[in-house]
Amino acid sequence: MNEPGQGDTPTPLVEPEIPQQRPWRRRWQVYAAVGWGSFLVASFATMVFFAFVDPAGYDWMAGESPEAIRQTGYALGFFFFWLISALAGIVVAYLIRSTRGEARRRHARDRESANG
Image (tube, rainbow, N blue to C red; front, top):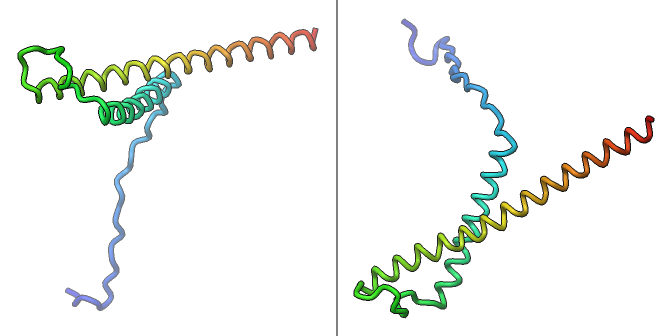
């Protein structure tokens, strides 16, 4: 057996083969973009809104502790802001998609009239 440092060649590390990932479908990319973007907007809106408004200051959950009212108010406020910003993102995605479709149809019509 050889002593360390005398003619030993290190064996190369074999990296495991990483399976090729399929690209996301266009529709799922839009869902992810709208969902993540609206989540970030809702987080920011929740922080700004509840910096000025204390949910426990309103008597909309009679008989509950102020801490439970706060937690419920924060959660409802966050989901409200998330819903509103997601709806805005969906409308924007729809408008972009419909505009692209109209541009494709117009381009196809122009091509047909130029060839015919």
